[in-house]
Length: 319
Image (cartoon, rainbow, N blue to C red):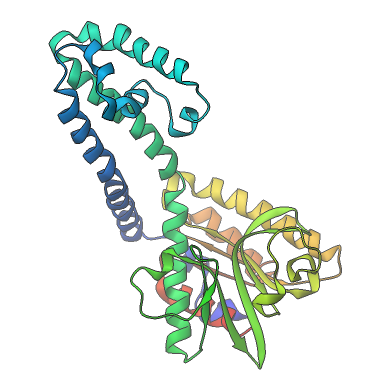
């Protein structure tokens, strides 16, 4: 059993406190990094707004009209659906109801409300950040495992949508949406976050027995991802580090993995199924380990344990 090389018991899967703490710190640092542009925007807004002696004069400063809408609580998406008259009415409402009552502090009030809306926008993107951090960590380890093992690979670049050879790019993991390599003389293609037709749901990691040019994204039924027999392995990756949400993440992932097994079994196909999680608590660890021993899961690892993830990646690239 492939997992036995890195898991000796269910306790091996439990996330230690030190890793939870490190995960929270990484998340906080990334949040601050992403918040920096918003803070700089607020500073610039204040410089322009200070030119106005009264709240009403803000309407005359062309450079800040977009920011006034933001301060009024209008998101960037919503702005595209408003006519100019509606935008003006919204800004006037902000001025009459909130800025005028603030008296001489109207500029500070404007900046606070601008940051409030920006913060709400940031909060939405932050909900996906833990998953992104987890995906980046897994990708770094997978790429390193290939490199150390002397396996040539190419990656699918998220920006250009092209397959490229690695060239020591900094933070390459943030651009990877797939990898390709050779195993046992056969081409292997790993695709991230793919809607799998037999399952009709998105799956985090899908390994195919085919070349990349056999996968045509979209609804082309000639594509390899429409052919159940082309799937070698499918996996769920949960990068959230908060122990409070660990059980819920596992329930979601376990249900998804169950759907995958049934959908492929109905097609008389049995690809390998694996799970990687960052926050794994005691009861959850027991259940995962039991599924591994019962061969319900083919492999599993704690994302915070590099030895486990390297072992799983080595197994994956050799399938």
